[in-house]
Image (cartoon, rainbow, N blue to C red; front, side):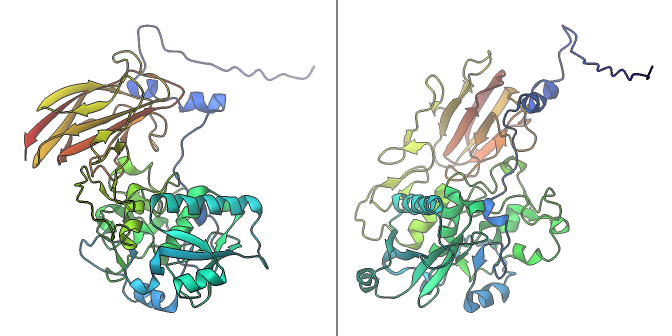
Length: 443
């Protein structure tokens, strides 16, 4: 008789009355893996997966003049705030981008062409920019013969701004056939550089040179402040920002680290154009130049292309003072010198598929402090990708750090008149949630 091998699997359960440590109890990754549920991951933008020869920073094509501006002066200093092209000769006249689908070689399949048209529609709905297919009448209208030739390529690539006397090729591949990845490439053609290359980037992110794949160190250069221009703060949530593992030597090690680790899960997102992306495009093309309205937009809103206030996420109304409605029964505008707010159903478990928005309003020259006496959300050490509380402590228009598990362990202070918080839960694994106290005091 052949010997048999007996495999014994021991499964340990917590003894009743002896609860697991909170960090273990809130960690559901093992359950998600066993049941085939979605597991969180860091963002890896699609346009950087395939490196195309002759491109810079994975997907940008540069003219000799742009190469000289970037490569000849990449060590700019000072806390300048820049993200879009400064040389206005690269801006599309009249805010009209002329394009044509390549119908000779490298023809785009219909499903990718549909994505391109959706991305064009996205930019048109949020800015004054207009995209017109090349024709004799369009050439006469714009007064030049330049146009974007959209082709199928081995990767996603684009020139930066309007650069040639004739066609300038943009390529879109199967691998990056995603609405916002395509909007990213269109962003380059409008005049956007990558956010991580701004001269002020070292105040917000750290470049991990030791983790960069050999030969790609140049893709993490810092531009001179004469090359790009904007008046906006650095935007880690921008759709023009690299992901944390771009050009990593092993595909896992991080090449870019946010100085605030709570922003790791948003960096490199391709879910939407950020509020600052859209605001910067409207500023570059002077979309409100003809407006005569004297509306005073509040809460970091600005005069948009339709001469009405364009508001940050979760805000609306004529002057951006109305709060977006979330899940019934939670959220709201908080005023006074102090107060308390909680997650839904607290101290019972919060509900699934929930979004709550709070706006704490204070007088000018105030400091808002938020302190948590209870905080228990599903944990995800990688990116807080399941249930989270976002606190927009860098401004209402900028992505804020996301907290989950047992954090934050200390109070959050914001020096400004309005602080936005957004609680989100997904469809599974609910926990106790949080109770918070806010106080407002003069700075």
